[in-house]
Image (tube, rainbow, N blue to C red):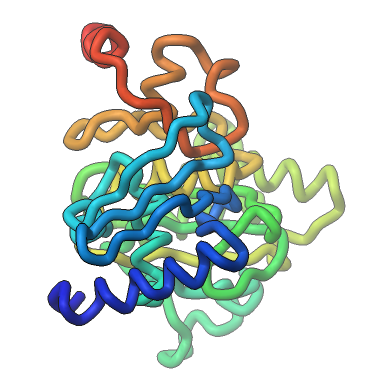
Length: 268
């Protein structure tokens, strides 16, 4: 990202255009954030999310937008706004039909899951650029810590997805669930699509939590836990206090923080 003089005036003008038509900024998950005010001189944008429980607007400052790539609070909308002038380099590779990966496994030109990747993803249908719920997400896999074994983990998935497990000796529970699904629905495992995400600067756990919430894959039995370094997302904090039923259907929770709830979430 360049200095503020490079991108903020351009972004303010773009937000002003969007305020007139269609009136909102939309996140990758489809949530509309209506633009109430844009002040280029003060470095402020005021929005109201259609998913806000309180209906109260929220103020996005220039400082918040500077830290958009690392932000956890309001991170989804901050990145969506910055992407208006900084089209994202998604870091996603693929998707590839699993059949192609198998057939081209000794082809040096075939992209291959990197050992130090962040996520790998299996879908029923093809996607373009970044995966979305429209591609029928089936499984999102991540790695904890800094171990460089994503290539091996994808191999574990593929082995079990093709049925090479038994006697309690399988390596990948997600691959086994996908294999059973393929049997039930007469879908050949080699026709599923595989992709992966690389971003050396990103927090692995936060990224896994975010994409799990975006895609809600069918065969992830348990949602990933909150990041130990950056804490739970707003949605996870809400669920800790009130349970999953209180979280609604959105990955954005925009109620202003309540100190009592914050203390309760830390004490649990």
